[in-house]
Amino acid sequence: MPNYVAADGVSLHYDVLGEGGPVVTLAGGAARHPSYLGDLAGLSGLVVPHLRGVGQSPSGGAGSYWAQASDVDALRSHLGVERLVIVAHSAGTRLAISYAAQFPSRVERLVLITLRRQAI
Image (tube, rainbow, N blue to C red):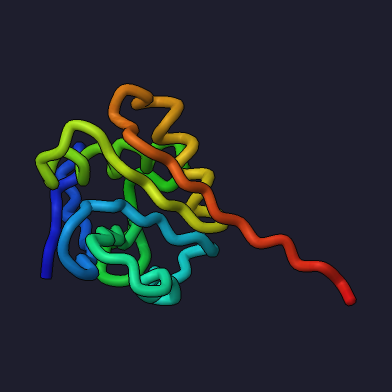
């Protein structure tokens, strides 16, 4: 079970899907388990963090998107990369934007995915 340590000492979990990457993939939804993303139609090298209070990560500490950007940077450091490729879905895009605003030099690429539903 892969874990990394956040700046405040909390151990947070992440999943690795496939080889290559890493492509940090941020799920959306209010405390929704990131497994709903699957492998994003066969992408490889996905690193999917379980944000605080979700999945196998404990709750407590930083709760806002702005504060959780430090958790993403701790994951970057743990993975041993200088810059991240980030794919974010739905509410995860808010965390991705918060990270990019605070750590712009540590972002290689940023893909933001949202879905607008049309009433029929």
